Every structure is written in structure tokens, then in C-alpha cells.
Image: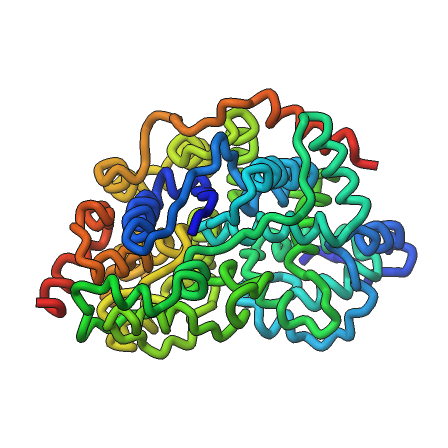
Length: 289
Length: 193
């Protein structure tokens, strides 16, 4: 199974543990990935708020280059995943926009036909590699570990490519296959606050508070996420939010690939587990002793 | 007490604004809205909005240009797309919010030091130059413009991120073929009809 890997800016920065663990478990599962040469930022949500031409231009450059390589794309960041899929969708749906993108690409010697598939690793792992293969790789079943399966929004909205837009189950099933127990989590696709935690704190912190509080109440040991911003929002502000609401809301937040790596028996340092702000050390030692 | 006209007259409305928004891909289906309120009901940020999503759609298609473009709503949208997947009329409400953000910036309705806008513009300017985002310089600029107090309160987190290798002081991520990147974006702007 060969894919073109589009990391996106955060996997080289705050979500480094995501890239590290993703590369490790891909090796175990036989997923061959090659980073898209000279990929550029997808534009995230900010570009579309300022200049729609530039926003589509950014995304179409990476898409055109990936399509030229010919393999399916695997995109771990949910934001990049949604932006690239949206660009492809708009390219195929709106003739005027398509012509504008196609002629701009021609000017720099690139072309795009809307054929490349843009997949999230959660989709690839569960639906293409398959849970049977995942179970085979489990050397250390995570028995007794209760996990919050937090999807966030962009992995299933607005393009519910591989699961339900509001009540998905892919991550829950994956967690089960690792021997751990996914807790029933009604806020599984509630937004994490996105960039509002940095710009409009009152709104951002409050929604993160809902997640932390519900997670603590569920009795889970930790939360797993599939998106860099979700992971950062739920992990980085726990002290501030605990203080603001007068409750102890500390709970480890990992990337799902890190959880997989633990079950596969991969060394913690190679999974980026030493880079976490809220350490999962204690919880893992206690539960998986 | 300051006296203020509380109602809007027909002559205050801007029909061109409504038609313009309805004619772009993001505004598709604007006139199909049945005002069911599902969008407002599902929006996690609606509790902070001056005009909820349903009202923004109603006001946009009537031509309440100034009200819509000076609203807090369009900046509070976190792009979760909860509204979009539930809308029975298939209106891409989240994408409509993006179009309204752009229009608010273009026509000078957005307040200059508003953090959401400052972050967007700082991010944009940085990525235009380098092709990729480096969190540290962008975040520093955002905090410097939003007030040094914020920078102080965020310092512990910043230090933790630097220590764990999740953030770098140097802006080392950048693309090689900047010429292709810039020309493509320029062409997209030029090819706008």
C-alpha cells in the first residue's frame, strides 16, 4: 500500500508527536508513505477568510503535484484533509472556478483533473489496511484502558467520506481492536474551539471545558484525537481552564497513532510520548502495569 | 441615553449585496432557506453571537449589508460545519461565513485590532512569504498586537513547547519553489472575472 504523505504545517511543529507516531505505525502496518516534495501550506481556515483565490491556489498546487505522482494521498491533519477535499470538490462542481484554477495552473506548468484521492489515516488504517491486520500487530493489548474517542469536526464534516458526519464509529472500533475500551462519548464530533482558544478565549476555553469535564466524568483514563488542533486545544490549556472553572480537569490527550504505537509495543520515545504537555506516564503505568 | 432608530427601512437595504453573495458558489441556495433554525440550534458558538446563523442568512438575502458585515458572528464561526451537514436546504452556511468575512475585510467593516482578524492576516502574510507556517513568529506577532499581558500569561506554555521540541524559535519551514507558488497565487487573483 503506497501513499503520498501530505503532513501539513502543524505535523512539523506542535503536532510533531503525530508525525513521529504515524510514521512508526505505518512501518508496522506495511503502509509505504513518501512525503509530497515541496508541499505548501493548505491555507487552513485563515486563507479562505482573506482571499479565496489565494486559498484555492495554495491547495491546488499541492493537489496538482500529488496527482502527478499518481498515488492516493494520506493527510493526517483534519484541517488539511477538509481543505484539500473542499478544493477538489469545488474544482469538480463549479465550472467557472474550475476554469480559473486550471488556467492558473497552466501558467506555472501544472495541471489537475480532480482524480487524486485525499484520505485520512484513520480511514486508511481501518478501511484499507483493516482491523484484522491491526490486531495482528498488537503485542501489548491495552486491557483496562478507558479511552475517549474524540473525532473533532473536520474529519467527518463537511465531507463524510468514510463515516457518519455526526455519529461516527471508526475510531471507536480501532480503539477496541487495540484491546482498550472506548467510552461512549456524546461530544465525539463537537468542535474543539479551533483557533478561538487563541483569539476569543471566553468562547474557546468554554467549549474545551465541556470536553474535559465530560471526559473526566466518563471515567476515561485518556483522550485520543485525530487532529493536531483538537489535540493541542484539549491538552495545552488544562491548567488555565481548571483554574477558570475551579475543577481539576487534567487528563492526558494523545494522538490515536500514539495509542496504536503503544499497543504495538513501540518504544515510547519513538512515538513522541516524551513531548506531551500533560504526561500520560502515570496513567499508563497504573493501568497497563 | 442615546437615541437611535431601531428599525431598518427598505431604502437602507442593499439588494446588490444580497444578489452578489447569492451568485457565488458559497452562497448557493441562499434563497432556498426556510428559516427552520436548525443551523442556529446546532451551532456551538451561537451562544456568543449577536446574530445567530439563521438570522445572518435571512439578513444577507434581504440586503442588511451593514448589519451582517459588522456582526461578531462571522468572526466567531469556528468552521465546524455542523450547520452545513444538517441544513435541509443544502446551504453551505460555514462557507457563506467565509465569504462574509472576506467581504467585511474588503470593504473595511472589520475592526482593526480584533484578534481573529489579526491572526488571519499575520498567518496569511507569513505563509505568503514562506509557503509554510512556523508557529512561533506568527504567535509572537499576534500576542504583541493583542497586548503584552497575553504574552506573559502564555509564556509557561510557550517554554514547554520549546522544551519538548514542538515549537522552534527559528522559522525553518519553507518551500523551495517559491516562484511557482507566488505566480500561481497571483494568477488566481488575476484570473478572477
